[in-house]
Length: 360
Ligand SMILES: Nc1nc2c(ncn2[C@@H]2O[C@H](COP(=O)(O)OP(=O)(O)OP(=O)(O)O)[C@@H](O)[C@H]2O)c(=O)[nH]1
Ligand SMILES: [Mg+2]
Image 1: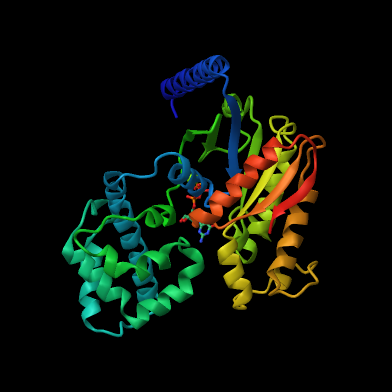
Image 2: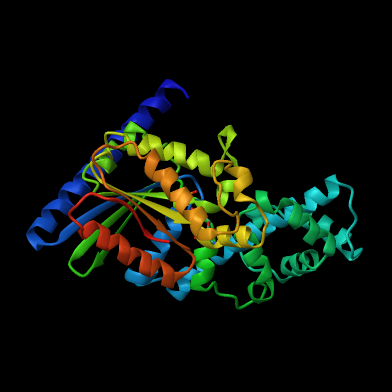
């Protein structure tokens, strides 16, 4: 980056911080005058751990939800994700020199090659036909099984719903919105007013969790919501060769929980993808014991496994003064999230410190 660009970036950063500062001051003044209780949450955790999905749920539950036109606008992102995934599946097939079960798909493969993800800007019957034909091919299904660990978790959901999605009049449902991964690239802030409380939720997406650039966001935080994808126990950690993703999430939690920005607020660990983890354990897809040799219980006993994980995180909490609580949730289930959010509200009402699990 040259000198001018650096100065410009610094200037923008200063302006942004001033704006955040101003907004916090303004909010504080207006709340003081309105006699409203304020709760400031910061949402942290590995990418894809469910932070935005939780915010989407709160919007559905307490923020008016998504209008039909807002949902319709999300169609393109869904089509683009499906085209990107199909390209990966086809590429893997070609690399391993496997032929399609239906020879017509060789022709579709060439057509798909010509489509770039960014060129998909809306509905086209022709590319829907290509997707349907390829997805119905046994060779692609096998490619999907081999690659499933590397693909976004909701991929199967969208392809299983292809006949609905491929309709010209398709409008994503609220559940589709929840299932669609939307990586957060900048700081996102949402305010929800529930009864006489105002909840300000900040997700510093795409930022290193402790970047000092964002210290303004951490001022005045009552509660750190730390999201952990439970189903990562059998997957590699993106930035460590000797840990799995669950161990990596615990290590990051140990760091953020001890930081001076958060050591005095309530720590709430939200264990997401409880549903996916249960499926893996109950169907014997993965052995928890193999991934965590210290665990001595049965691998298919979800309650035992959840207790073990919960203790791992409670022990990892590095703050001496804050409360730490754990909740387990399926964030794609609105009912379950409503229940869990009530527990979160309850926890924040409690005056005393305790380390406990509030929902298994
Ligand atoms: N089945 C299931 N899927 C979940 C759950 N929580 C999140 N997901 C899915 O996980 C994907 C990623 O979720 P996000 O909420 O975008 O993750 P994030 O933490 O905001 O990710 P970044 O913004 O990239 O940091 C989405 O496709 C969600 O549907 C859960 O509890 N169960
Ligand atoms: Mg996000």
